[in-house]
Image: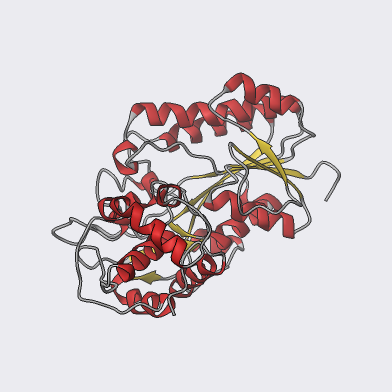
Length: 363
């Protein structure tokens, strides 16, 4: 790599940003991790840049003081409280559109930018408004519905053509990783639910609705895919679905999660975790004291992920929701072939949360 090979990872406190920062750092790149608050999981050997993407003038001033940035991983997202209800909201869409422009406009003007990776997801296939094609492929026509993905995609395509940088769009499925207090990570929600049920003397019952089959992706795989896209010309101008490479059922996974967390299984007990968890903030404080955990409030651990858990567990559904399966043939044929065992992935990150004293060890 040359002297100008510096990657700016934006949204570095989130699942993808954290994983991408680590992947590039391991590969020897100069990494600048940008986020509003200093990420908990970014080592001090990685530079941190405080950045509020909603403040356009501040972004321009910050970029003017940066070294030449050759690559960007754009993993920032603005979500509204309640999460799912905001996905079609015009204000949410406009905000995400402006945030990307606030960053890329001044970076492109630098003249050093060579590649930008942008993140999307299955909402690109209309999953929030109609059943998806099975499997969803990157080549299918757009599903016309309110979505900030299209606004960002149209902008980045136009800007890349004007300024001469390449881009890649990644579409991961449900992402599992180590981050807490983020918008869409079911892992800490599962652990918090288990700890609170244990404290109440209740079993680790599956709280969701009808059985569903899902795909997911480990955050480490997404981070490695961001690195691959930056280093391989074959990825330029392409869109890729991204999963662990297998399907899974939450119900079938539940016994392994119970074993990992050392809690007894119970009969299914449908409940909204978006309601159950916040109502037990005081009980969580007791657990923190009893187990000498990191002194973190429950609300700071949840983010919006408890709302996301209700969605992926199909709570409140009277029938299995339509499948959201995507084909990952394209990226595998292009040369990125990483895969993870999904059950092992969730258990790995639960153990990580226990090791970091975010969750209690209940043995």
